Amino acid sequence: MKEGQKLYRVTLRGMTYSSTGVVEGISYVVATNAEEAYQKVRKRLDEKDYGFSKDRELDKVELLASTYEYTGTRTLLYL
Image 1 (cartoon, rainbow, N blue to C red):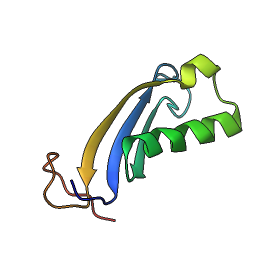
Image 2: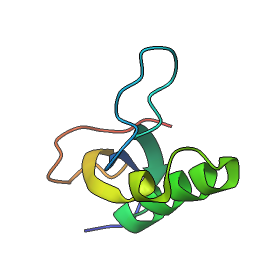
Image 3: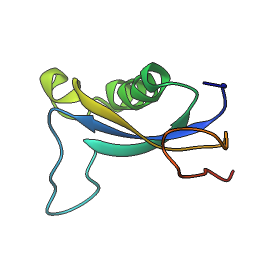
């Protein structure tokens, strides 16, 4: 697959529910690959010291869209 920017939904093990503010455990990230997407989320949460360390662990990364026209997502990402 050709490299380009992709949109991922990153879901962590914890912090996926909030009754008062932002749900930190589910994020939408633009990155070139799934590992980079998770690392962007993890770095921010580590810097802010949000949640417990175990809550910041990765549950799943889903590819939602890509800037490259011919991918399996069938959804284009416009930047």
